[in-house]
Length: 212
Image (cartoon, rainbow, N blue to C red; front, side, top):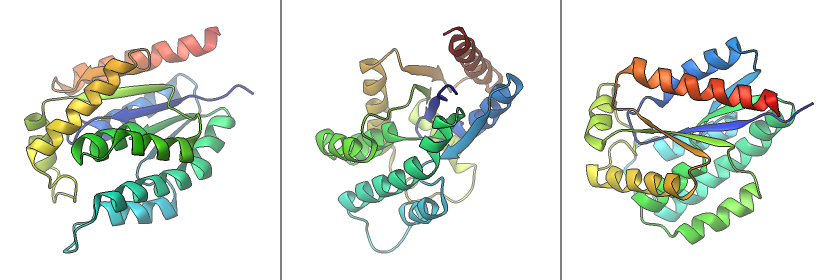
């Protein structure tokens, strides 16, 4: 049995990750691929409990290091409980955010050391990295305007525009450092245009996997 693929969808708030993940699942299923769609933080019952701790606004300020450790605690549970078993069984895993989000949000946004994040990445993941990263990219003001229409904002969505600009720049830097794995899609365009590009990418990846 061949190993499945691990594809993550990244981006700042309001870029349409949930919409594109749903469409990606349909595309891969139509192509005969067994697919699992999941998310971070979360993906298992315990990891979803940690997600609630991370996203729920509260009176007590969360220390940045607490936030970082909670993110990786959820990731460890998710990775070993759900992601790796699926990949090893031949399924393709589509994940809404992964460690790129940690480098972007806790690193770029919060200003935590990239070296410290990388140490935790190695501890929790070993050599596991996404095979491909779909970076849905849009200007911060565009994304935040969309996010506000979704309803009440979570603890991250309540951050200021300057925070999300740092997050976006961190994503850009990571994509530039490994262009062979990162696929940047202009998410400020119409839904049809973005969906077309993502569908084309996934179709190419499936064809490539079947030719090797």
